Length: 280
Image 1 (spheres, rainbow, N blue to C red):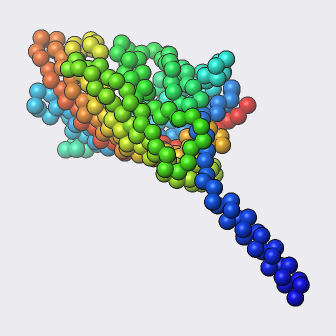
Image 2: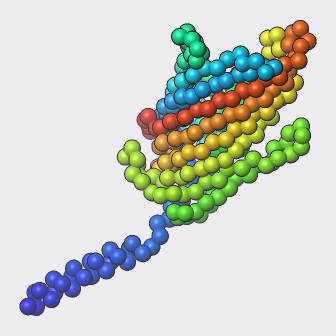
């Protein structure tokens, strides 16, 4: 009888301990953890449609697929813990007009150096080569669309909103994205926090000259919603799934001095995932 009571007390103590642990709310700190000479490899596939209208006439209406291979090489950490990351992107683009069996295929590789804080904020970009206007576009895109993690330990249900003031010809507007910690999950072998997001961006285009065309002004309005899985122990994105829509408008002048009003509508479903890690 004494052994039975003792066993009962031991089981009771174990259950009490387990239940007591469950009472605490799980909290994690979200930070990128960069180590010099580490390489992160990502794959990304975007599928969707792109439609271009010039002066009320449809000039292109196609289905497109983009396959990306990305490498982040952490070259060094600066004294303030900012990471200097060399990003190499190689993509293959396949597009087909909806009323045709003919398809276009192209491939391209580009490289840039990115300076990122542990909270995810990109403080500077140095493309290896870029056209006028492209650098400004990339900086605007990252400033508005890159998540910047709050400080401290965060629990499920926590949300934050990132807002950016954008100066447009018609006056300033506010672009914002809201993030929320939805749950915790095991994904691709990593303990992850699942973050849902929903937001909008507005990216003004700088005047620039292209072959036979002079861009006067333009704006890309982008909405995005999705989920990202962030490995909070290792400090890196493991998976990201996104619905991405662009509504673009451009005003320009052709080589014949004709005014051109171009509208662009793009809808993509994007899958982005970690393909490998190489550590020093």
